[in-house]
Length: 72
Image 1 (cartoon, rainbow, N blue to C red):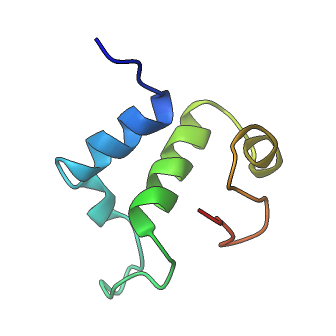
Image 2: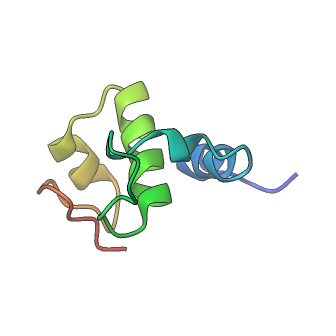
Image 3: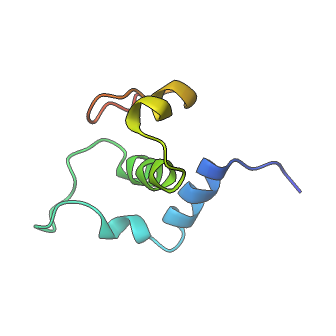
């Protein structure tokens, strides 16, 4: 069985059933953030593991603590 990461599993479960489409602006328009699947999966992962933005930026490569600033 191949090795998997928890963030990868969250991203796959967001992609397959499409639960990440329920996040976003209340108006129903498309989100203006880049790569919404990654951003919403990252928000669920960090919230579920009780990581704040600075801890996530320190432990995950390609992520910074500023608003809308994932650089992947």
